[in-house]
Length: 290
Image 1 (cartoon, rainbow, N blue to C red):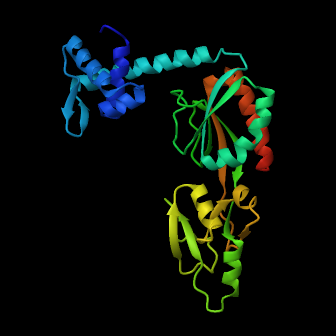
Image 2 (spheres, rainbow, N blue to C red; image 1 turned 180 degrees about the vertical axis):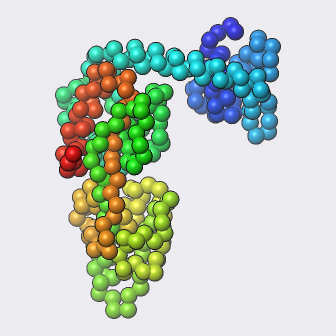
Image 3 (tube, one colour; image 1 turned 120 degrees about the horizontal axis):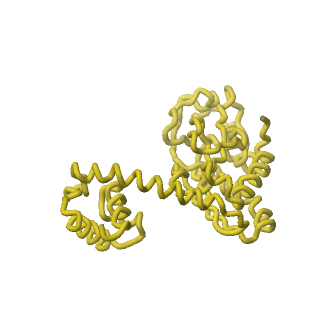
């Protein structure tokens, strides 16, 4: 090998299965990735990939090399986290991944105060539901709504419980109440959930589904427009006086909200002060009780 960097290009293609996806991951153009892979195979005198119409597939030699390169990558990441862990400066970036709803309603309202306390710390927000790998430093901190067990290599601290209720736009609900021969209330559902949760109000029987969404703020916007009624976190629904809360058959199950960091990042001072701040602020808003 001429350069250790060849392994980085090889692993990117091996993990993504295509030159295009690898170029995006590495932040270079496709021709660079293709040229580096071709030169690498020529230098190693071995074919590492089969070029298929569907993408790049590892040969047996490529699979064997991938196993060794993954070990090298893990060791480099260990070194990186160890060095980063010695960083005591209260300055620099912190990459936080969370959902758009949590960022807008729970995190950003208090960040102005944090910025006054620590003006040299930059917050890099990735507002998505992607499960970023904290071990590989794709993010420094994650705020996630999950019932899953916390992996051993992560520090998980519960911020509170995410409570839900069913809401509707006031005028829509009031007009429904006045109707004698009632049709079912229109229901705004969620992707990957039961079509007819057992906590739905009796008035939504049979189910009159008009929309489904995988983004809570899209559900909120639809409810606000009077399209129908739907489930929202109480920190969103209760904050909007144009919405009314419906009486339910039973309580909607709540879900824990977790603050997650890698164990090695606890020694990074800027991460330490940020997570302590978030714990205090968000636990207060969520009425956390241990």
